Length: 184
Length: 281
Image 1 (cartoon, helix red, strand yellow):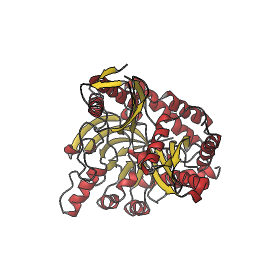
Image 2: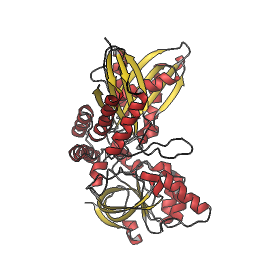
Image 3: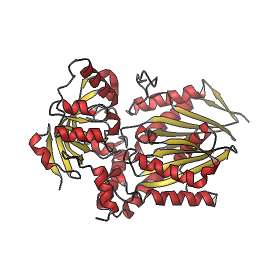
Image 4: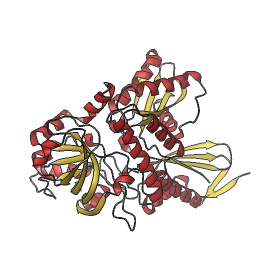
């Protein structure tokens, strides 16, 4: 049975989220991908404030298609997380609680997830029509000039996720294939 | 007899194909997915494949893109030699069609003008256009939107003749292993072998887009496709990379004559939503 979770995620819930667990996430998440990350990291390096307060928040690596008239959201889904690896530890250090993306993370990011008591979820990739139904509101909150890459505040309902890397560093991208290959 | 085609007809056709390709997965790919779903013995993997199939249905019914990465519009234009195009250049017509299709069709604009300055062009132009002159008085247009989750995992290597078939096999398998969960498995592979540096990349792209039905005419290549597919599906990566039998749906190979000193090989990795739409003008 999937675990129901609300974002921002209560830190006391983190130890209950184990790699491989199914989660239905509701609440507020912020989209940010390559270009938005580059700008946020640049802001950190130059001592400027981030355009959103990321403490306790969830970032979704996603750039949706435009919403057609009469719809809240266009197609939406996770992009490849590893491209954000060089930016992620700095954001975790500043209190980012959860990340949604797809694909495995480097050792440094996994260590940073453990150190900060965060969680990395994956959303089903290439299922963007399906996931668009989980979006209840979309509002651009920063870097509007980046188009699809702007930071958007989403309200989501029952977004189907899996815990990919838990607070102990267990990684579904290792454990899943191992479980299948060992026949368990 | 020369047949005259107006550039607007080309633009109209391309615009329509962009939207169709992004919302309706080819029947052939859908069959591969549903067959894999029936065959997949690992329950979490089967569940992933069920969701992927369900997503395709929703996309088609609601006219929402299958994937938010509606890609770079790769356009193959096979132009009959007996065609005269009036009213503008082919390339401009194709780009006009892409711009309109991506804008009016509410598709994502993912193209930046310059790879280093990285400012979005705003309408997903330009297309990655490949033109070939063929017999006849028609233009065949194939629009194959290519997402970069899978494109980024594609590789090319100039092997030497001594590397031979084992070298080719190792390179293909290594590409899939390195890609892992990133290209949205189950993947479809287009493999080019032979030609020159630039030809082999295009061979791989064509093999992926054409996704030949039925066996390869060369029995050795046909056997190689089967063998690679089998070996890839022993890796355990599985759908979404969560483990399972189905890491790849298909492997397609195209070959070309090459130099006595060379054995170029290219692998174009396609995701589970390897899209294309074909039209004629």
